[in-house]
Image (tube, rainbow, N blue to C red; front, side, top):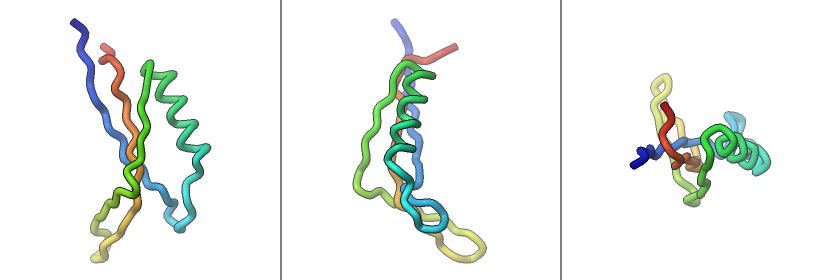
Length: 74
């Protein structure tokens, strides 16, 4: 029986200046994860949001979720 792990990567959909991250960048990441780990699944829940405290202010990000659900590697 093989062991697999689910790894989730939460990525901002916008850069710090508010510009959207390009779809081509996300597609490149998906290809890289597939090449590295043997498979990857990408899905966007429109949109997820992340909040964090920074210097006394609350920062906000719209995020996309990317993950790898391939087999575990030793």
